[in-house]
Structures are given as C-alpha cells and as structure tokens.
Amino acid sequence: LAKSCGKNQVATYTVGVDKVVRERAVLASDIRTALFKDELELYYQPLVSGADGRLSGVEALLRWHHPQRGLVPPIEFIQLAEETGAIRDIGAWVLRTAALQVSTWRRELPGCADLELSVNLSPLQLGEELVPEVLGALSAAGLAPGLLTLEVTESSLLADLESARTHLGALRSAGCRVAIDDFGTGYSSLSYLSRLPADQVKIDRSFIRDLDQYSGAVALVKGIIDMAAALGLDVLAEGVEEMTQQVILGELGCPRYQGYLFSRPIPVGEFGAFVARSAGATCAA
Ligand code: C2E
Ligand code: MG
Ligand code: MG
Ligand code: MG
Image (cartoon, rainbow, N blue to C red):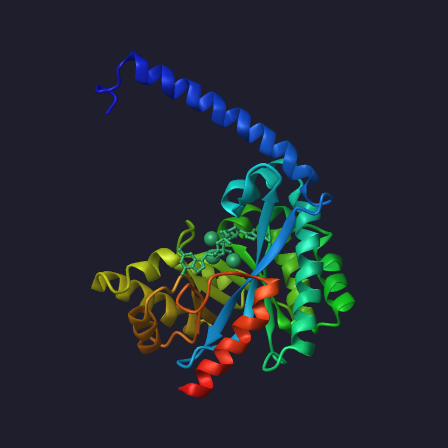
C-alpha cells in the first residue's frame, strides 16, 4: 500500500490527519459543556431472559446530541470525556437519571414491576466518590441496590485492582452487582476471573457474531459459559442478532441475552410502545 502512495496521496493524508486532530480538539472542548447544555440523553437497551425472551432489565447507553454534528455515538466521545475528566460528572448524571427512569417504569409500565438496571462505569469513576454516588442515586430514586448492575471492563478493573476491589466490594456488600463487560476482549487469563470482584460476565459480541460461522466459536463460548457457571457467575451474551445464535446459546446454557434480535437501544419516549409490543407478541405466541 505504501508503495502505491504517490506524493499527492501523502499530502492529502497529512491534511486529513490535521483535520481529524482539530476536530478532536473541538469535540473535547464541547463535551465539557454537553452536560449542562442538556445535550446528553440516555437510550435503554432491553436485556432478556430465557427461551421466551422475557424483558428482565435495561442497559443505559449514552447519546450526545451535538448542536452541529447531530447524534454522536459513545465510541466517538467517551474517550474524550475520560481524557478531559468530564466523565466524572457525566457518569454521576447517568446513574441518577437511569435510576429515576427505571424506578418510574417499574411503577408505571405494565409488566415492568421487576425491571432491573445496568449502568456502564468508566475506570475514572472507580474511586472514593463511587459508593456515595451510587447509593445516593439509588435512594433518591427509591430503588433497592439489588436492582442495579454496574458494568466495568476487565482493563478498567485491572488499572487499579485494589481500589476497584475496595469500592466495588462495598457496593456489592450493599447488594449491587458487578458485571464484567465485553468479556473475552481483555488481556487477563481465565483464571484471573475468579479473583475479580464480579457477579456477572457479559460475553463480548465478537464471540457471538461468529457463533453460527464456525465450530471453534461455539467451543470458546461454551468454555466461557461453563467457567462462569463453575465460578457461580451469572452470564449474558451481548450482540445477539440472529435467532440461530440465540438457539445455540440456549443449548449451551446461556440464560440471558442482549442484542438487535430483541431490540436496539431505544429512547425513553419509545420504551412504553416497545413493552406493549413485546407483551402482545408473548400473548400471541
Ligand atoms: P457496551 O457497554 O458494551 O454496550 C453495548 C454496545 O453494543 C452498545 O453500543 C449497543 O448499542 C451495542 N449493541 C447492542 N446489541 C448489539 C447488536 O446486536 N449488534 C451490534 N452490532 N451492536 C449491538 P453503544 O450504545 O454505541 O455504546 C458503546 C459503548 O460505549 C458501550 O459498550 C460502553 O462501553 C460505552 N458507553 C455507553 N454508555 C456509557 C455510559 O453511560 N458510561 C460509560 N462509561 N460508557 C458508556
Ligand atoms: Mg455495557
Ligand atoms: Mg459490552
Ligand atoms: Mg463495548
């Protein structure tokens, strides 16, 4: 590829990089004000249980309505929010907002009395302020700690395992659960899992995507599910898009799923309609 690049291409490429760097700097400064400018919104993606796909919970997922760029996905701004430190305030807002929302749905939506909540945590949130922040959000919303799962990645746990263990440990003692997000993409060995402060494993979507493609993927996912069971951990498969994938996962003993097969992440205003539709589908079946 390098050989085929003439001078012109190299020049274009350099201009492109400059532009990307400039745009990144602008976004980084914009994300600092996004929260008080009311540009952030939470979408909620259903988490389902069992072969009948019963709605058991939701994962809160951030969206940013940028005044010029429109909807910016988290992959383009979470890292910036971490680099600027804005993620601390944003993360606290996510906890409070999502807890209030789920509490409201539990009271008001038919069939949602047992709805649970999962929230993603940045490694920057795993410090001293985490415990009061989480417990404060729960009590303000009137949600029991047992209804909340905190999602962290292996790498954010391992960045400061002692601190994570202390603060997540305190929250687990209070009843909250901890999930290892994107499991299988980190560097830690499987044996490490038994030493992490976790209650659930979320199998990364890259493994699920390959499930109906080759048998090696089935063996890998089976390995993760069996190991999670042996360690007494709950397990959920991310990124389930095809019925065949859910069938294979069911045969392997995976009890929980999340993915476009069931629903994309949905804005608050559309959640009631989703619940009504799913209830209708269950009755019709
Ligand atoms: P995640 O926590 O692993 O969330 C799941 C991501 O997979 C979401 O992307 C979701 O839309 C996507 N997804 C779900 N089902 C499917 C599927 O069937 N197929 C495909 N292709 N994708 C699926 P999203 O919303 O773009 O979020 C990306 C990541 O941004 C999240 O990954 C999480 O790491 C981060 N994030 C989102 N919200 C927050 C937040 O409030 N705080 C923090 N710290 N991170 C967040
Ligand atoms: Mg997550
Ligand atoms: Mg994930
Ligand atoms: Mg992810």
